[in-house]
Length: 387
Image (cartoon, rainbow, N blue to C red):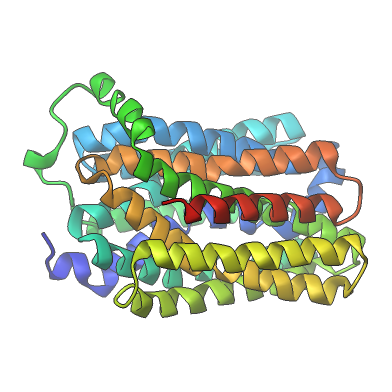
């Protein structure tokens, strides 16, 4: 049930910040990854892999817990874990230690976007939920725009360690803001069975064809998206020679596209079904991805064409993420916490596939990143077309 406390600006801003935790935790240090690789004597791409492993696994645990205890308690615990993990990353001295603390950091960070989505489903119907998710994406997009820009400037004047100390401060501020966030899961709607019993919900969710169709389409799209997020620092900075402080601008332009399409999507959901929107948006994304891969293969257009086509591909996230998530949660209205956890686990866990493929198959050119994006964007499109 909605109220001024759950529709006002503070509520939207706090949920947007929670939704942004994943991108902020990674995007802010992307410009520093080449420096971290040299400093830690290891592959910095593994720090993204570690984060996503922790993120994917922890969501499956937090989902049933939130259905049983409500949304606020897991959020408070999650923010505390995030602060501890960020401090561990700042103090790390080798690649093994920072990967470990990135996993720990993710145990807390994952509660943000997962429970923000669940809270939206607690409060709003299918179409309204898609509108609210689009609104959150518009506001939360500040993080992936500001993150690389801040990180790129910080690495000019200080070490990469300070970036993680900044995350500690952000985590503390988020912990404090949670006191203003209301509980959205009423006592009578909570799962009465034990938390252990609640894990059985995942088996039912995996058997739900409609839920899994939307979820797997979103997952495939995010494999492609994370291939860019993980691979672009090396492609732009090392291959094309872009200065780290300017990399953030090339990254940020994609988020501007996401914000624009999220704004448009708020109106589109009133005119078209979520299924139609997902079909067309995923098709545009796939076409842009395939064209980008072709440009890399045939050495046409250079970095300028890559930037343009990636912009088109990324912009579609403004429709794909909100529409697929709202449609998936609508298919299983009684298990919003567990369903949101499974969506998030597969969505962000998909980045494990991207980062591992890039870490093991990269040939020092943009090609590996390009074919991964094209392959999985096409798969996302095909899944969205299924009846």
